[in-house]
Length: 322
Image (spheres, rainbow, N blue to C red):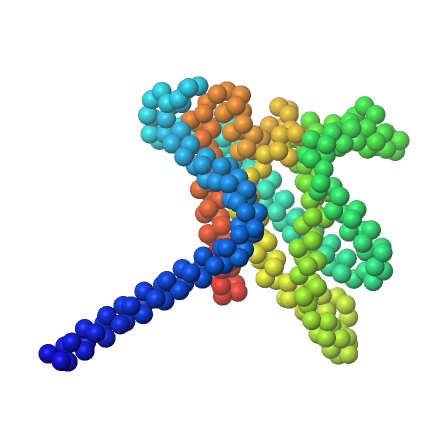
């Protein structure tokens, strides 16, 4: 009996100790919350906006399974909206256009951003480097509407600077933004002009963490700058490149505003993307069920792409980022 009582008492003490530990953890959390209350207050608007614009709209997913009228659901149709979009030639065209534009733009983004970061890293004149960085970053802060207006004027066949130069050299004016042949290269060029500088910031930051003694040792061994870049710089920032690639891959189907302000019915075959197709179906044609089904399909594809990229990350460097 005495032994049993001792065991019971030991178990009670263990439970009490666990409860005390839990209370201590809670007290620590509460103490930290009080201590950093102003930081939590600063974060509160961000959390509220995230909930309002990212999580609350998720309840609208059910619209994809209804025939939805102006004032609410009319009839439950199950998967009919999905059958409609997969049988639509316009949706299939928009889907493949989205993949085409997004993946080419993603690859060009990585090449141009890393290339600019490497080139800027070689610049020794501090003032020139800062001026160059500022010039590269500025286009990012222009809205797509302003950017589209600028390039529409520059590329206009009537008085546009580019076509005036072509005519001065004896050529014929080119209708860049209404030509299926020219629209995609022009779109990709405008994207890189606007966003390359901003993307470069991440890689410039990563380059500052590279050990400079490695360059000195390589120079002593006779390695030229190109070999130093290939064998020291790129391996040092490869994790950053992979993380940026995976994060951008998650947004690969989120192409909308940049296309909307530059495309027109003449180039739908090469320019119409999922975002613009959804915009026309949902807002212009009031087909809310179809538009929501397209949006849900896009989200699922994005999730699959991210999971695939994370799996590749585990294969390449032994760990994922998710």
